Amino acid sequence: MSAALDDRQQAALEQAAHWYARLHSGAAGSEDRHAWQAWRKAEPLNDWAWQQAESLQRRLQEMPARLSGRTLDLAGQAHGKDRRNVLKGMVLLLGGGAMGWTGYQQVQRQHWLADFRSTVGRRLALTLADGSQVQLNTDSAVDVRYEPGQRLLVLRQGQIMVSTAPGGADRPFILRTPHGTIRALDARFSVYLSEQQTRVSVYEHQATVTPLRGQPHLLGDGQQGLLNTTTCTTGALDSSLDAWTRGLLIANDRRLADLLAEIGRYRVGWLRCDPAIADLRISGTFRLDNTDQVLRAIASALPVHIETRTPYWVTLRPA
Image 1 (spheres, rainbow, N blue to C red):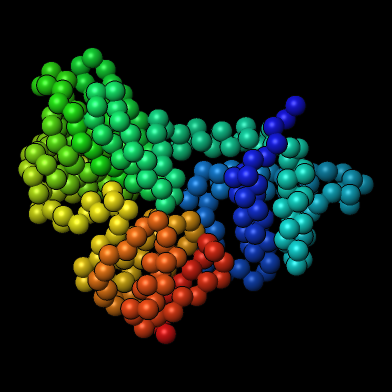
Image 2: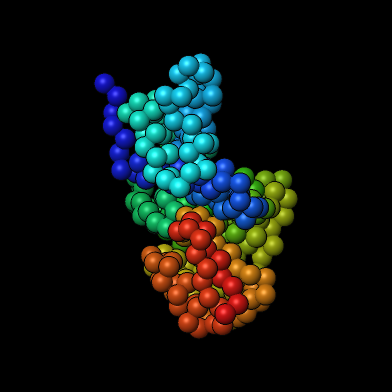
């Protein structure tokens, strides 16, 4: 017997129905498509739901004409006013979720599956086998490989804070990213992986950072390094960068566009600002567990207003 769709799957299918309807309405523009792509990337479940919508539409199109009139045409429904019909048809025709759940698991295996993973807007605290403490920031993923001769973490995505437990020189603590490795014996440090580089910030003691094809650099207490595959640029550490571990975002005379890019990491969907207000400056301490409230606080402090087309597509514009 197939398993019934759970609440999260149902919600993801509903969001997929919304996006399918919007993209096939004939009025979708480039911003709609950027927002849709952001939604797909925000959660593995979202990408799974979209794949179900596309797969379902293909199956419907392949049905004999004598049967197609008795089934749901998602594209046709998308032009109508009742998007709930799209969702209803998707859920019913997925047959209770067994095939759909297999598809979700396949999506997970492609590039979402890791030993530990946090979802968008959530943090995850871990205690490893040796007592080391690891905290994953929003939308982060890490593999743990503990062996007799080393303690290895592989950061697949996002940002983590590590407080290593003493392990001795014969069992170093190593963290690996696509850009290189970080080696520490007894340290508190964070690592943030982006597409272009890895940022390593050392808050206590020291860590050795080695580019994939470069020379090692020693980072001491209060230093950070920007690491790519060949070089590491070092500098002083901004001590407010670890505020996320306490659920906070601290802005000190920060450019609005940059602040919104950071806030966007903690919410599903598309968040942007009009270029006319991108260079406005703002300072403050904001709680990351309610990004809608953060946006309202920004709107009350600056001459901007919030334009919400959907819960997943928000733009700040001049007031």
